[in-house]
Length: 373
Image 1 (cartoon, rainbow, N blue to C red):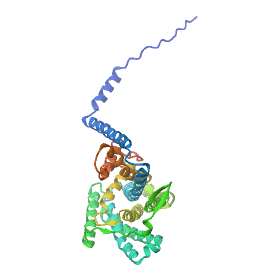
Image 2: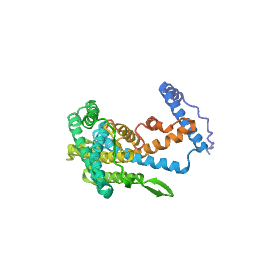
Image 3: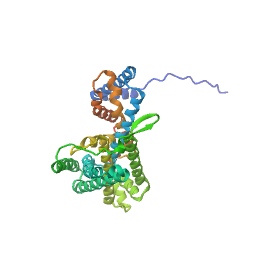
Image 4: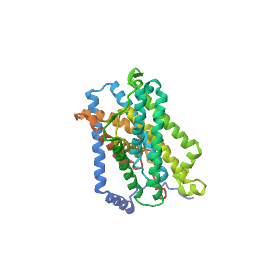
């Protein structure tokens, strides 16, 4: 009869191979990794300490924070509209259109003259919806024309060339647009019309808000919803997604990549035209350099959400706007920094850097394969 013996669990001793692997991983930690880790810890402590100090200080009431949040959504909607142009062009061409911010300027600046004419005649106050739609239509038409010229001159000749030529051409086109409008209309800052129907207030949850904020937020969301439906539900939208996934395979399936790229530029320019007019309604001024900073922030929003991802660009724009509005008083006021709101650009771009340090592909982005990248 066989005698059954119970198996005795012996303590596991790490093998030499696993110990060598761990030691090898420790050797792979570089000085840059240590600096980035310390940077993350330092910024996290700064945010936590500043937030706690601000809340303990009690300078701002709940209504103040609500105002900050709503203003952040307002400017975030503008950033999101402009960011869609960046992310769609990148999704199709894998190139950054750095002239997109100044394309926004051309539409807003051109529509200014129509808006001024409507304001002087009283048409802007008498028929606000019709007048605003006309202003936006002109802005979109100018933006589309300019975007198609940029695509034809700066991108199409270099579409199959793996070089920095398209990027350099786009930057050059940006300067050309700026100084062309400066030469035609001067460098003075012009006051955008301020119609009476944007001067009132509305009551939301018992709190008074400027009427312009819910109007602009609703307009931005409606425009983005239309764009999303076009991309997801139409035949051309399906072609855009196919070209974004694999341009060569899409061509083999009979998709005209050239038409898709042109349609992408048109869609992005339309969103930029709407965003430019909304920007002017918020900040009440227009000048030849007005597209640069919103363009850079919109590009940051696109990268933040995941460049090439349309919902990511929408989220990134709103998120950046809210952080830019709430961040300075929340993070810096409790630290005793005077005039913290003047550092809103620092807050916005620091957030971008930190997101890219933790997640280089953005919040909603995915790592690209070598072929797509």
